[in-house]
Image (cartoon, rainbow, N blue to C red; front, side, top):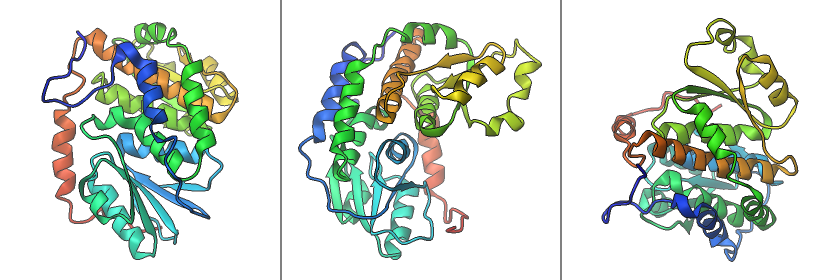
Length: 309
């Protein structure tokens, strides 16, 4: 059963026109004028919005520092990313960084963030936040003056085949993926974990290599029938060796050319996989009752109990 959009529901990505949808979204800011910024840029955001900040850090030549919560360092510009514009943690971080003298660039469809920012890049309204990823990436790259990387991202989509999706879906169906990656592919791996959770309603976990070698991989050598499967994402030495090291590990590589191509092509393919897994399971990928309840808990926090490091 595929997810169909209700008349009064959000506009969702069309799985049958995947490449067209992505190219349209990524191309939406090709004419956006960049802001004249210099020095490092602080990027912040949560979930599917925040992952764009991590992608920027790895695929651009700009100095991008990403953190979900504020740090005690002065930046001229903060890139605050929230599709809804009402994400509690992002608004908190924006306020704290503004106190340190930063100007705020908001990438959002509206909300409180748009009202409080110094500069707003408006995203199309009425979409699922997780489906807005290519629009957010397009806006972020264009705004900080990375049009070359934006064009490369569009090219990555055109060069990426969705044919491997079928094998990935069959391999992961009925399993609990434990996803490992390192380097610049970490952003793609985290995104995949998020999409499996939200779209396919699957338990999925993520850890970095080689950190996981010190504890987490041990159970794979003791209980091969646990239902968990190690999924290795990336092309480097660690990815290849880990896929050989862990019993029954599943390796997902990408075309090894540029960081933009590797990261964007992987996200493009693996987002599609999450849609196809939801379809195979016959579930409603749009509804997120747990996350909605979780957001209400977060909005009631009086403090994040964190020090600015």
